[in-house]
Image 1 (tube, rainbow, N blue to C red):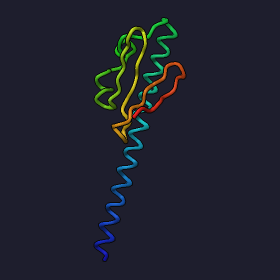
Image 2: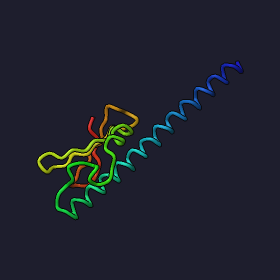
Image 3: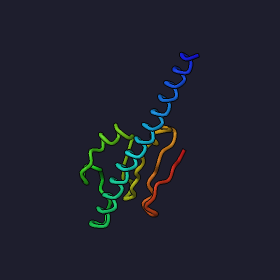
Image 4: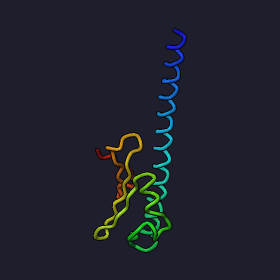
Length: 106
């Protein structure tokens, strides 16, 4: 009985640690994505146009893609910024540059 309780306790702690880690990763991904969105908005306000790449505003696009699956592109002057949710890779967060808010798409 004691062994079973110990195993269940360890499994519960592991599950809680996993959930906490996923929540932390989601917060960090959003913080980085918010920083990118803010810098994109600043560039648009300063120059009247969005940059062609994240490198133009000081971000390493490949590092953000590897870390958070964050992606930015500019098509016909229209920006697209999105990243995958950390707790559900089937959901992507897309930035709406008009409302300056994130919207989930699954």
